[in-house]
Image (cartoon, rainbow, N blue to C red):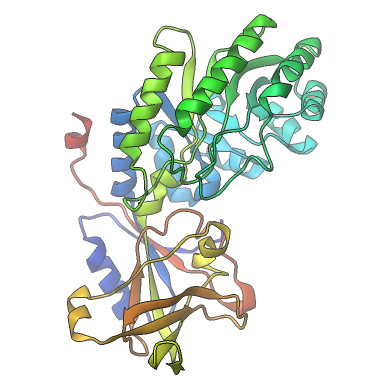
Length: 404
């Protein structure tokens, strides 16, 4: 990951103080993130307390910042990897290969060979050709059949690309048996930012049906992977605790304690979304007359955009929420119709449009919270604009209170 980590704070400095200090010394006028590692720790403890039966396998694709992945490894999470590079990154932190699931149903031959060479055996599939590929290259793999999830209300959907229909599962499991492959479980993914509390109940019920089919054919079914889609900040339509309550109830019904099935999940944004704050600067400003509203509006150009930190606007359908550096000044400013642009020469580089916001001045800094998921790991340097740098706030706080 070619993102510059420029400083690590190892004291109790508040995030606001770190941002102020960086802005005061930022002569390059470059956007930057501040990562709150303690926020990630709190998320981890919250997960363990809320869904104690479900082991989290962090989805590396969501944010592969080395400091974050290494920290999660130290906490004992498993990892959901989708490529050779992600597998190697996780292994470099001393993670046991048994704590990695190669959760890409459609893998390159080279990557399958590599997984075998580093003893990563657990991997997903959803079609016959993938089974035959694995049989040839990694016949000792522990396979997990990915089925389509209930993504009806999810913001980002995956069924169009991955997942077997229930009607095809019996034949796939039968072919796996004929190829003498080891199918050990079932997985699904309900899409990112799932907004239906009972979606997991329905998918877990479907997984139970596939489990019974596998057992009927002689497979030793011992793993259920309930995927990702868990909210990463407090703006979610369905709170994490509500989703967790529905999951726990469904597990008690279909996979009760003592049934011999291990449960894992693939949270990504849950862990990191709220951990990162982005600071950006107004580099240009235009005044435009808004015919619809009958008064002037403002167009601001920021030093980061959709080709950089705000790529989630395009790929994740995210709606960034700008905040003033000092919100106490909001009441003293006039609000106007606002459009915020990124710095590139492409007109698609629009962060947010047609909303009311207090007037800003050139050189003023803005704050965007909840910018830890699918941001820095997907950013580019298109048009020659540098990616945002990273500051790590590794606050040395008393964590024992969260463990009780």
